Length: 365
Image (cartoon, rainbow, N blue to C red):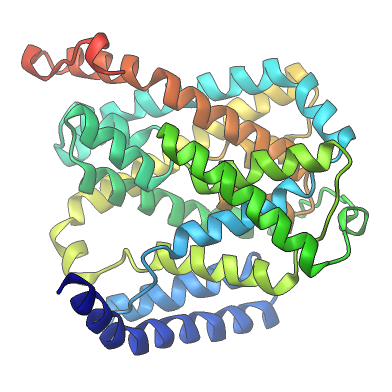
C-alpha cells in the first residue's frame, strides 16, 4: 500500500518538478547571458522563489540539494593538488582561529536576534551560528530548539549572502587570477563512475557516523584524498556542475513560500538584520587575519562568509580565488561546530536562566 501511494504521489508531482527545474534552467541560462555571477544557481534561486511567491507551488526533488552537494564535493575534490593540500596544512592555525572567531561572532549576534524576533535563546544561537540549514535544524531538534525556525533563518541567511556577496565582490574588481585551465582533467566516463562510487561510499560512512554535510564532505574528503595522492581518473563535466548549481539554487528558492513568509515576517526581518551584521563581523575578522597571517583578503572574505559551504565554494570558483583554501576554512568551521555544539547549547541554555532547558554534557553526546 505504501509503495503504491509513493508511486502515485511521484506520478502526480513529476510534471510540477519538471516544470520547476525547467524554469530554473531557463533563468540560469538568462543569468549566464547577462554575465551574473554564479548564473545557474542565482537564476534557479530567483526563478523558484518567484514561483513560490506567486503561489505557483513549485516542487523539487527531496534529495535534490544533497545531489547538488555531492556533485560539487567531487568537483572541488578534483582541485586539491599536492601543492594545494600542502598550502592548506600550513595554514591550519589561521583556519582554526577563523572558525572560532566566526562561531563566537554568530553566538554573540544571537542576542540581537532574540531582541528582534522574541525567539528563545537556544533557537537563536542555532539560527545565528553559521551552518547548513538541515544540519543546524537537526542540532536544534536534538537539544530542544525549534528546528523549523532554525532551518528558515539559516536558509534566509545563505540566500541573502549568495545574492549580495558575489555581485559586490565582482563589482569591486575582485579576481584571484587563478588559471582554471591548470585544474582541468579530461572527462573519462569509467573514471568518473569510479570516482562517484568512491565518493558515495565515503558519504555513506559519514552519514552512518551522523556527521553534518555528509553528502558534500564525504565526496570532498574521498576525492581530494585521491587527487592529492596523484590519482586523477576523470574531470567533472560542465553539465554536471550546471545541474548541481540548479539543484542548490532551487532548494534555496523554494523556501520563499508567501504564506509562510507572511507568518514569519518578524523572523525574516530579524534574520536579514543579523545576517548583515554577521557578514560585516566576518569581514572584519577576515581583515584582521589577512594582516596577521598574510593571506589574500578576497579569499578570506569568502572563506569566512557565513553562507552555505557549497555555495561559498562556488563563489570562490567564480571569482578565480583559491578554491581549496576557501573550502578548507569552511570545513574547519563545520568540524568545530560539530565538536563545540554541546558546549554552545549548554551556554545558551544557561543564559536563558531556565534550568530545565539546560541539557547535561553527558546527555549531549
